[in-house]
Image (cartoon, rainbow, N blue to C red; front, side, top):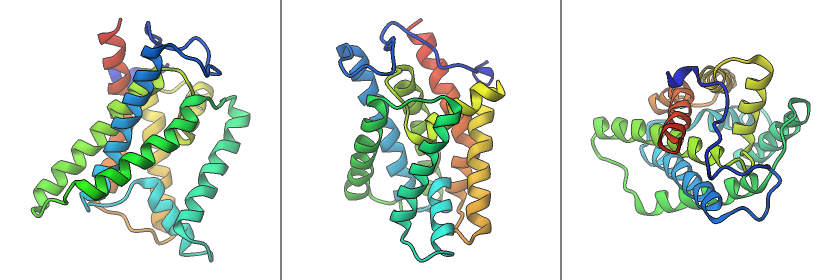
Length: 215
């Protein structure tokens, strides 16, 4: 069952090493494809107007208590998460860099070209689709083994030291983050909760599907 997955699968297009800046075409393609889906999902959540992602809620909550912008806080959170990688034994790679670039681009494209549904039910449907899309995209790009983004790297590191399933680790991480953000004054919507509780199982589903399709 995909909810019990504990490790990132290796398939025929996975990179042998994270420090690989000359991967084969198929590895690079799936890295970019996965990140494109990931960014698309993040963008769809924003345009659904049902609530920001848990990490955005955390940034908002912190910004309400210190004299810094949400953008600055987001950057500082990313740096702090990367620092946490050190004791967890995580290492950046090409995927870490492309994570920031491609996801940012896809979010901008979504905001520009995807309209917000006028019906609240459709907004909720879009939010559900967004979480599934982020999860599937996350599963695809992580299997490429070219380096994870800050949050995914933290998830992998915590999984290794806890030996809990990836779905449980990611869900716990997101729920903790959104709880702290909400306590600090951040705004939580139904989309935020869908993301917090659903992203762990969806990432695990993405990993499971990739492993089965390319096994």
